[in-house]
Length: 214
Image (cartoon, rainbow, N blue to C red; front, side):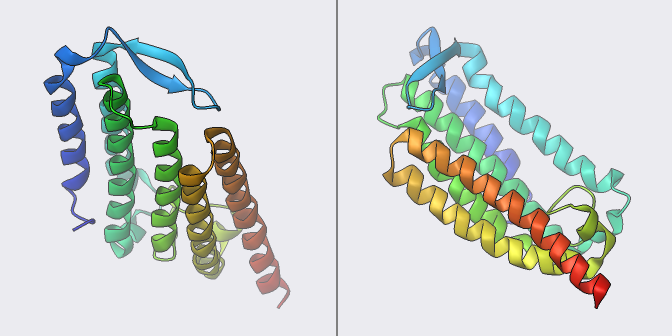
């Protein structure tokens, strides 16, 4: 179900329809940005608030569908097509939840958008990580370092190990978003992203060196 190619477009359509359904109840200025302490520090007009996130999502969807056609390693995509579609769906579901939180806050719902985003990013990391080991060599998706792109075995081992790190860090991010104040949650997200990046680069180099010297 989560790999169905219609999930992403339907999520975008749903949040557009919801936005226009509540358009008349939205204030003239809709909260659209929160600082590290969870305080609103940016707003946008009603029409922009209804369309901004769906437009971003539509652009991302078009890019995701175009990438396999322009990738020099396009022949790899059929072998992990269900995983690629799951990645697309997870990202668009995340955007739809953020949009729902933004509009819900403007309507007076007790949403807590910074908390929603923190938990959502964590779950997104965990979801992507759970499938990362299925991604085959390509130029756009996955852990792309000089060493993973140079050797399919380095790619495989890095993605299997990296996927586990993604999941662990994602769970930590989600818990931080749920339990900690927004400022600490933000630092957890930034720190977690750095851990994932450093591990991915370092581990791929380590495996490459191990294979080169072995």
